[in-house]
Image 1 (cartoon, one colour):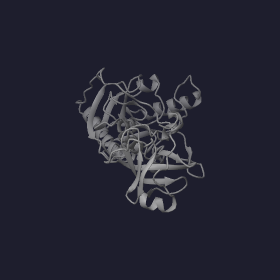
Image 2 (tube, rainbow, N blue to C red; image 1 turned 45 degrees about the horizontal axis):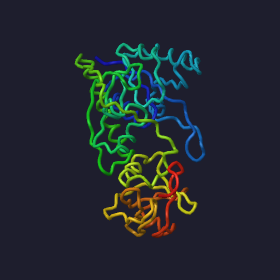
Image 3 (cartoon, one colour; image 1 turned 120 degrees about the vertical axis):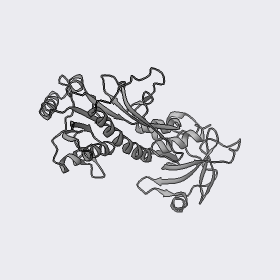
Image 4 (cartoon, rainbow, N blue to C red; image 1 turned 90 degrees about the vertical axis):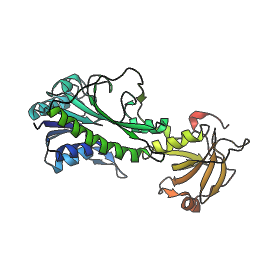
Length: 330
């Protein structure tokens, strides 16, 4: 049996799954994606990766601003409803779409709506599971294929597979690994469904956590935090929104760091530079110290510490400002 598949997604994470379904021989009858958004230095409208894929493969496309028939954009919702009805899809596959699906969408396909979620549910339900898993220091994450219901990532689990989080993994690196895993699992899920072997398991009530959306205000480093926690946040927020700190009025973006083996001097202040050299810039933290190895000036390029220091002097004894939310210096 070959299912007629409608697909809802927006970013690059979604495109990997859509391409895998197409390659596996499933008939893609409709693509739903977010409206074009301004991006880049010129802030020109840019199509999403899913729109680009759909246009390249001549697949019907809908870009509603909302899906609630009684919501802010009822005309968009009505047009999307007409497109879904015309597509006669057996299943709607959803991956990082960005819009909440109302009940009429969940009920429309014969097999319902299947979501590709980048965590091992019920851990890290919500918008930013990749970043929050790294930030929290989780040893592993994974992908869950879930039968969608009206709740926030609360539906039954159809397939799940763990993936270790490497000690150097950034959100960008982990994203690519999870996208590939999600693409493989959604194909497996539909193949099992076609043979009547796909089974649903309710999520456990224990171990629930929420991956709240990343806010740009979180980019500012609080040097009173432990070095290990700051290092994880730097990786978690790469590429968006990045982390940063201010020294002498200049903002410095921080992209890679290592927890320093040496002890933090007892009289050092949080944010104080302890050492600056080709091997990195070591900064005292609330607990331990952190060696910054890749930095960037605003408007410049990411550079290894050695190259960065040629154009931006950082000397021992100088002190990065604490984030505005963390109060005065320690």
